[in-house]
Length: 145
Image 1 (cartoon, rainbow, N blue to C red):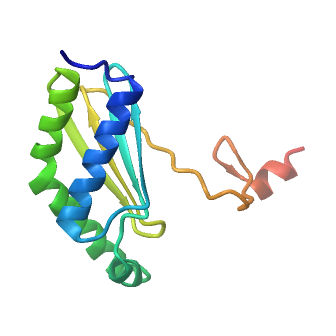
Image 2 (cartoon, rainbow, N blue to C red; image 1 turned 30 degrees about the vertical axis):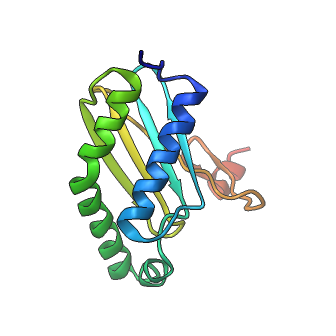
């Protein structure tokens, strides 16, 4: 019997699988994995998933591009295994998959969708103050008051 995509058990099991796979592929275990699932979408975020060497490389624009390219290629060759695990856990096939790498923070986001658009918003760490209102930088927003 398959588990519904929204269940806590599904999220915990998939997070453990993703963490294990990332550790096996790169030799580096992410600090944490977050799973957000709905009826049609599963999004995995691997927190602090970059190795120390990748973090150093990502300090430059060219280096960050190489890190992103590497993780996209890694995702391309390993995505089928993760797709199979999602299907095993949900009983549903994955129709689409994508990866986003954020070299500055070390986050890697895997999105598995069913033909819908997925928009991912990663928040700043607590204690970092930034004010943006409807895409308007804080200075412009304040001057309009």
